[in-house]
Image 1 (spheres, rainbow, N blue to C red):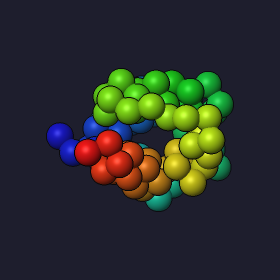
Image 2 (cartoon, rainbow, N blue to C red):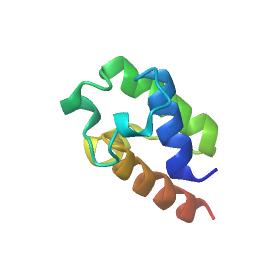
Image 3 (cartoon, rainbow, N blue to C red):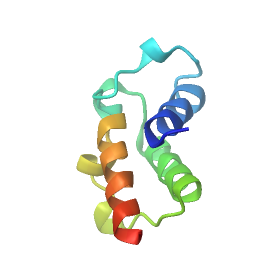
Image 4 (cartoon, rainbow, N blue to C red):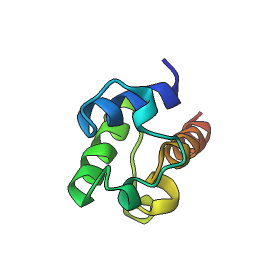
Length: 84
């Protein structure tokens, strides 16, 4: 699977409780749409760290990195390039 597919599957199945891809647009803000709350964001961070073998530092826990599928994909890909 791709980074995008893994992240979409996780959010859809664990937070929206569906497998309907139409339930979430990649640019939708998790916080603004109510998809994730603060606890959900922490669960998402744990998923990202375990799935992609990277560490999300405190200063990286900002909406620009974690508030949508699009921002998450860009963040994970940046982290993977730095680690490569």
